[in-house]
Image (tube, rainbow, N blue to C red):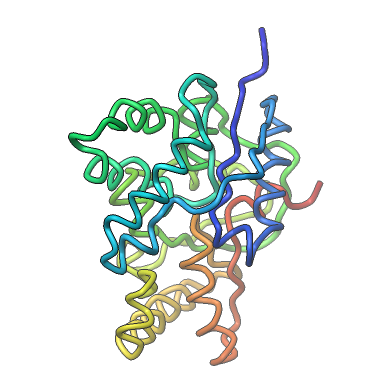
Amino acid sequence: MSAPQVDLFIPCFVDQLFPETAMNMVKVLEAVGCEVHYNAAQTCCGQPAYNAGYKEQSREVACKFLDDFPTQHERYIVSPSASCIGMVRNTYAELFEGTPDAGRYHGVERRAFEMTEFLVDVMGVKSIPQARLQGKYTYHDSCSALRECGIREAPRLLLDAIPGLERLEMAETETCCGFGGTFAVKFEAISVAMAEQKVEHALATGADYLISTDTSCLMHLDAYIRREKKPIKTLHVADVLASGW
């Protein structure tokens, strides 16, 4: 049986600020038997422009995304960002409705997955046996993962299978952390207050780690944690699954 073929989709946010998370995703995908491909010409999915109200400009960026991941490849598109996958699956439907690119969009949409849902729902993986991390963790359901992609159980399943790692669910885990892209810039005070609430809920569990699927949420929460010198560490799920081996 041939190895599953995967195209990496590394969002600009991850590429510029958290490249080690992208490399850890590659490590995990290869460990479960995937053949990984990377198109270095890829850029952004168009989400920043769309969220800022520039619909036409975001469509131009989205068209490039369709070019970067041609349907004829028929390879899975896997990303360490539920936020960007949510953009491709949902917002692209609006951007390309009634356009000549609608067919290309549907060809891409059905192949696009966040890393943990790809591992669990597509590959049937229930654990990464090599992974090791000691301590207690609590999990943050990002808005994009939960509401746009329907991801809840997959990351927990993979994390719970790691020897030495114990889950402690926090209160209001499904509540937004306050990042929301441009929301954090336009409404700074509200955004910070939401981060404070999320971090306090995490601390109340006694967890050592706050883990999620989205580096954007984690960056926002980590900034508050560092400023206030709180005793908890943020980790992306890919970094956890690649730890200890």
